[in-house]
Length: 435
Image 1 (tube, rainbow, N blue to C red):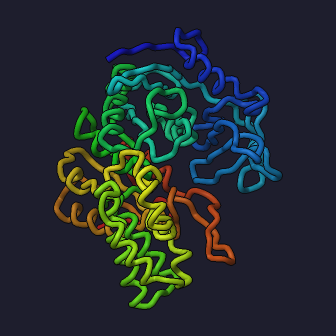
Image 2: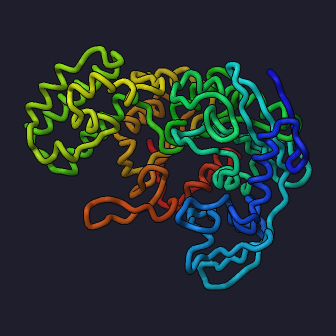
Image 3: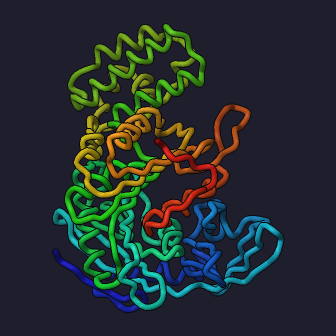
């Protein structure tokens, strides 16, 4: 393994690390606003995380409280105003506090996985090295954005946890091509935890992974390939990508209150598209053409989505034969990935947190599998938070039935931190433990 270190703020021989460090640390420039990303607090009991610049058209910086309240500093009425590494925070009771940025030790590094150079950062709480402190490697979901500077990483640091975060291949400052190949991504995560253990030697106790969404497929697999003491997963699935698409289709059919005949057609659609992706678009075109004819002009055929089946349904057979593989099968996704088998091989403690009304990743099959693992005595702690959607977000329902996320549900971030520190207590918002 090739390793190069650079303390944050120093000159690195790698030009892209210099650019990355500068962009994150000098967030006070015009692009990002006046505060460096980090943990802002004046006590051990309360803090807010300030992140990088918000996505346009919003202005200001992202913020996140440990109870899940989040937003952008530049919005009118924001409870967080940041200036020169001091956050002016309006608390729920109306009082105002000034919280300075807490000191953290932040060390950048490059490491190599599968002949590809990846860029990461170790963020450690201030103070003397603590040989009992947990160390967690953040494993990506399917996003293509850079992970370094994540507000979620700092939300764990604010709870006394050391965090190693890295830009996955093809994103941010890392090399390689973006992929959704779980095998390759698990190799990258395994290399990341070896890197993190080396960098934090003598200042941590147990080390493990946290994976959100698609990271729920990757993190447990990585833990079977490298030394890990725990795995935590948020809003992930223990079913294959094909099964995820099927569950989304059926969930949408329930929402649209389709009759039995239409639900049967939805099932046929799922089987046809499954054949297409399993065969990398060599087979299944005729079956999908029959389904398309059977559905005809039914209104629901123009609305149903799934993960990919709705788009396939609405493409012509000619277009699907011509560009279907390039459109839907270009990221090396393992369509029939057996996540349950991976969990059966996993020997370390596992935390799995589910969003109760997850439209992107319906939870019924995953919850059933987790319940069986718990009943079988596997070291699994599973929780469900009701009335939350993908990302553990609470939401409001709009007039057209769509949802607008409002905040991360209270208790979720604290549950992650306490579980990693082996200090779980009773009561995390509305979270319910799965038995």
